[in-house]
Image (cartoon, rainbow, N blue to C red):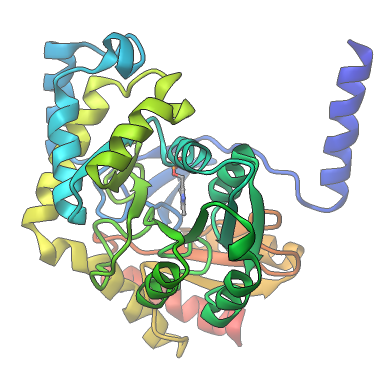
Length: 374
Ligand SMILES: *Cc1c(COP(=O)(O)O)cnc(C)c1O
């Protein structure tokens, strides 16, 4: 197909011209924080594996035992025959941790938002989304086909203005936001959002992908709490915690749940083992944020609110050059470029995990102070 290859080649050339082409780099992981890339050993500040669970022996043992008992795959959608016995335990744990009646596990966080939002909203509904929300919230809203409007990042007054103007013209309304913003590391004003949502009879959905296990929230009244098992939990999968009625509906109507195969048993077993540790070891869960704060304090940056610390450089070329410089110093810090972040806000995004050695954080801060912020 000549026209197809020409289409692809032209698109790629245009990405190249803007320095926005991305490339996969083979990266082998040693123990959760040390990586091997391009023949070099690097300390990663670019993983979302906040509790270093992805290589944890306890999770691996649980996964291995599940493979022996239940096999490597679910074999079908959960509504057909894929609902293996490990799911009930995982969903009960998630509901307990989030303080809801029930929970539903999806194939991934991305699939969760696609399925949840499109199951709860349709073309007569209003979907209000924080402007910096994750791509999968926007994709879910697009799939739902309702009227989507964005409110200014973390701006409760702007949201209120939109609700005042538009809420009355729609049947139902959803307000959706990251609870910890994935590229900025700041927190949504969940308590204020939940009050406002309640006042206008809108359903608040928080995406806690970067919160579970590392940032504890004020207990706000959030009826739709989704998140992922792919970050602090160390493995893969997504979830929604909500009331029994909502979860039953989701299990009947969310397309990415109904028409997609259940998670493999080892993945579910590993998530159970991870949540078990998260529930029992608050000191471990506090470490990533404490490490991030040590870094922001050394650099006189605003105090970290989560384990994610951005340093915004603006220019894409500059972000790439600084990332390369840090790689030469033994650190893996990915440059984040548009369209992942808004135009002219290319940045370094540092993520801190429980296992990062303090001395290495100090050395990183010294280099950043002298060669990036100076
Ligand atoms: C990573 C992320 C997701 C997607 O989760 P996956 O399980 O990786 O698909 C969703 N929302 C936010 C805010 C994220 O950061």
